[in-house]
Length: 168
Image 1 (tube, one colour):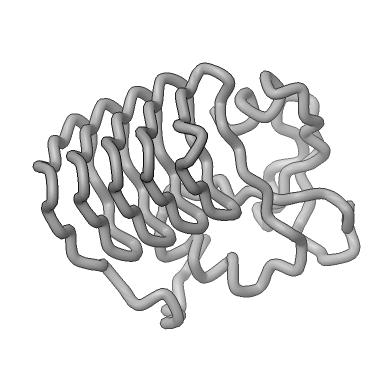
Image 2: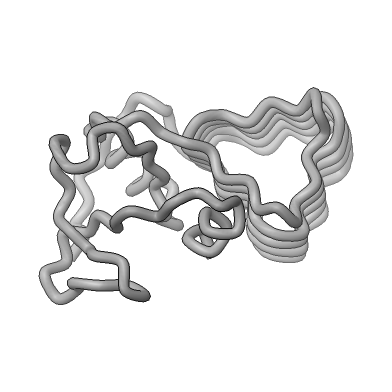
């Protein structure tokens, strides 16, 4: 879905980085192990659903991060979207909302006015976050969840902490 959003924005999807040696192409796009010297000018998005893995990898990436907003998402002109974040089709982000770094806002999510979503969160499809709510670092908002206005969702982890994860 992220690749489709990139293409629909008429941006160029150059390569996928993945250390899985069994992958060589995804939809005719080459898959390579990550290396800082490959496509140095390109901006990168970490399309990894696991918040902790996304956070750990972001610490080691040398490339600049981009922002992907699907053309069928609606984002208020004064909303702030952090680097590395992805806003998918049908999402609505209202005035004054702040979306942190490396956040994934899935399809058909509504983020009401003045919501703060901290770094490395994932909001799954068809969810609603009410006005003035705050979602802590690394939190997961499950599909079809309604967060009442002004609610505080605690952080799942500290942004600086790195946890060893077995990726394969």
